[in-house]
Image (cartoon, rainbow, N blue to C red; front, side, top):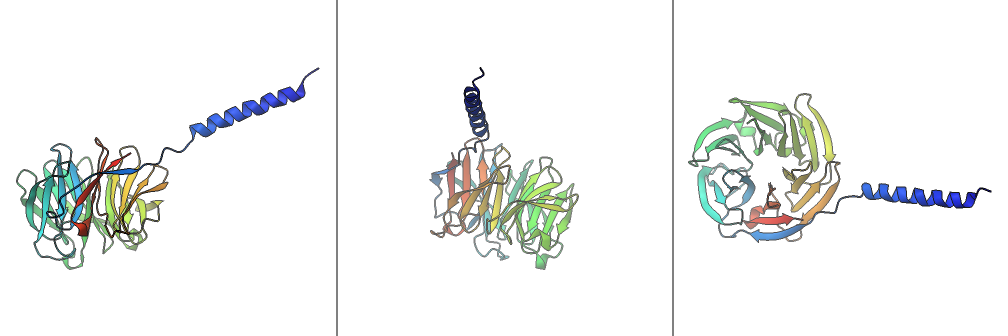
Length: 293
């Protein structure tokens, strides 16, 4: 006689084991957390808006507005820091106008300067070239990103434009309200950009060849900096005082929230080797480093 009850029991056990293995194999990764490592001297920097790490020289560049964000006052400057928070050259490059986003390529530091993009020689700290917006009186250039082959992209977060500098040719490659006030930029190849649309608080992907825009994650209020984690995920800052991690599926995790303390989180940087996330605090005049765990 066939023992049907025993066979059914075995089937349930086998099914349960299979489901258990399947669930384990698709389990969500462990949530990330930030552990504070250091904070720079608050008496030195002046309204730090962005940070950028040069792996070749081990230098951290800091863009200091030192005044109003749209003022043509010449007070802005770029500082140089070490990866442990020591300011080694406070006024390495000076005479700038509210400098914000930065990008590097082959000894050139590209920095937004309200209505223009400036090109600074990293060997001397001197501005060698400038590129004016198409309408300087109606421009608010903000973030910078550079592709691996040297194409520079710049956002105009007030007037809904994306500029491109390629082979010396400076032009608007995309414009319109569909950009929803683009701030943070991150290049993905020659024709794809990640943008932080501040008007709708979203991380989005733009195909510059087709002008198609795809939303990756939402609910981040005033999106600012965007940096890769090197593993298909992204860290995104919200100027109001938050930092998020967005994975490759668009799932969003809050890592930092300093809004209650009125500490801003401006244009961030991530140093993969030490798993350090650098956060400029804007009005608090510091850069804070967190280890990502």
